Image 1 (cartoon, one colour):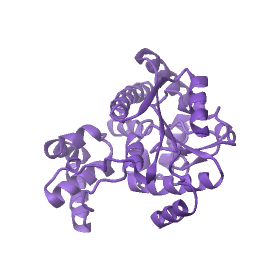
Image 2 (cartoon, rainbow, N blue to C red):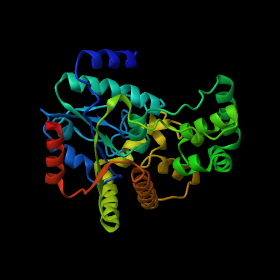
Image 3 (cartoon, rainbow, N blue to C red):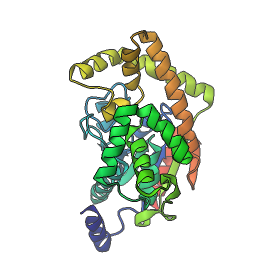
Image 4 (cartoon, rainbow, N blue to C red):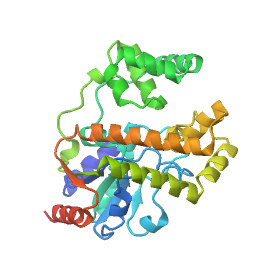
Length: 319
């Protein structure tokens, strides 16, 4: 349905996908602050953060607040219950709808976040890897329930090292998907190439934000301190009281999963949990940089140069 809508609109008007800004960078680099300074009459934001799509996961995900969304409209925030799985395919579907709506409003979409898979597949589409049968999905689910997710992750290392290096150890959906493909056809998921050209005639402006390692470490520590001040511990308590557990997709994000690790061990203090969150955030930021550097046509700009970045975006929008 989305595809036919896109085709219909493309045939009747200018291509709504031709002009899209991609703004990415690791956790805490400064994306939100920059977005808040863009002109709401010219741009709208499409969230590309895999945890900020969930309702109720506000503090631990560093979700943009009303002070930002009142300055510039955001799509794909608070659209799912944290029990629900948000796949890459679903992101593409919902982001496509948002692009069309933003185009109809005579604005330019700015896709922003830190989930690299979303950017990659939005640009190129999904690979031609086979869809999993219900039987295969049930088999993989049963194995994970019997042997544990860490066992499945170790198995993935044996059968698909490329996917293993791309996927986080707590990302049950992507670990399962990669094993399903392997069990289905005997080939690793990573052997199925993405299309080589941007889809839908996209001619994007791609901006990657960066800061020096030492500065990023300070920002990550400050970020956690602010989360605690805003009530992170209380947010976790309320989620657990509502029935949240470590199997919920939303609970697998950094800032949430560490509390379930602590509950299992029964030994970690709040300080130790904070240290673990900061450590995991650093490792995640490193993986984000590595993944983003594999993209073509990226304009890498220091995140402090906000006026320069805004000027580049405005000049692009006028072409």
